[in-house]
Length: 222
Image (cartoon, rainbow, N blue to C red; front, side, top):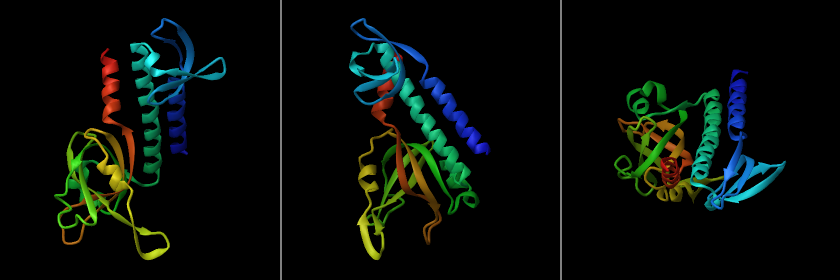
């Protein structure tokens, strides 16, 4: 019940923040009053007079481009906060580099997530396993580096105990840019005959690309 109340509170706060009436100023000087609904890479959706209207982001004033970036970031972050609350309620935990490195009794075989920035591909902890595992490094929410993220290159074929299929996460990881902000979801494990723990990643969600972050910061600066 407490979790449900918490999630309702999150969504209520976001709805209030996102649905606040706003007067949009276009570069032409025209103004449009409407509530922010959503935005993509080129267009903004607002609700005005009970109907949705599309505005080209390139037509917005500099201040409103910054406002869109802020609202989009707040909307996305609220979704990730709600997901984190659900995972925590299910018994999962949020990992950091310090937690994984220094508290094995808390994290071994524990499922959870890590919010972080992608740094680079790194195979130091998958040495000898390059044919089956892809390693990469991230910086956690405390800006501490963590070099022990692992994605298996192949997955079992459903219904086939002997077959293997390519893991699509491999292309996803290799396509990440430095400082892309991501959420990793998986399990902490200790490989056999090793004295370290690693994060076996099963799912990756994009929180904010490095390009989106730069555009938002540039808009804020202007």
